[in-house]
Image (cartoon, rainbow, N blue to C red; front, side, top):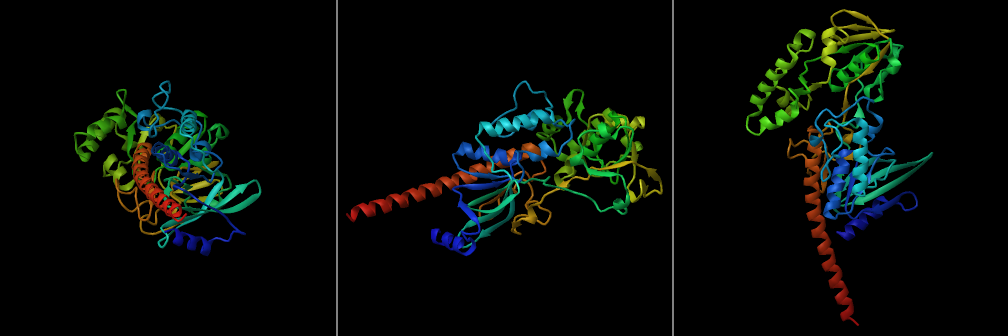
Length: 425
């Protein structure tokens, strides 16, 4: 294997043009919650690793692309990462700031020091040597340097939300007002008194619309397709926690029916407000399509009062105006695109067996964490932070066993060579 590795290095690396290093352990791409959880579990196994992060901080999605009022939508026990719970004095639903503090203390606790400002350009597996070649561009001020990591194992932890999705809507370029993605939205303060079109009715679209109301803006929310809206809590108990408890004893479809009955009792009939429910239940839809139900934190009350105007799909934009598919035209000042995110894995991972074109592992849960040739994926289960923690533990145990076996084998060879050298004197 060593000779093959040197051949790979000779073929691909020019020492005068590119710096490179051989990693004695896995390379983890991404320093979000998924990457941090995997690194922590590897640290517990005693396995060395390198974490690469394109931003200049950990959890860049949370630090740079979330709005100020954001809180975790699930109780903290379902959002804590492996090996370290949230502080006891944190509320049941930690704020964005508290969650970032938790992640920073998590990285410090497990001595995780990512290499920041390293953007992965490509990752390719060499069948002959059994090693991965990960090429990056390191940014330091105005200087950019190419770097290459050679490693035995590669952990993809870039997640489901690496790149924002911006739909191609007719006339949007001619709109003339401010158009931002939800990842750029911080608060409704600068939109006071404005008519704002929020495109998208997921958790982000609902919460942005609610926040705009609180700042005396007039939001219209585009609901293009059906959506499940569930209460965040049912009689003081987390809806998610109730679903988890019921799933221990009841089949998924029955749990879905019970959840919808509870939603109707607490929220009433939401369809008369333009929020049509899908034919598939909320949990089944999440598991099969990855579409997360909306947990209501107050937006529905504003919809019922008319403070949030629910509108159908967009036909086209014109200057300071939008035309809807029902022929209605609205004068608007600004647009917030709450249109979600996507994986960016296909843009840099040169592999087509494990990951699909959509940037997700092809194998369904719970089999999508391990691929061929030392390739792993964490944070792609569509099951939030608890799913990422579960993947992280599996990956660390698997790599830990392989790494320890290879380390033992290497020591045996070293001892044998040492003895042979002594015997020759």
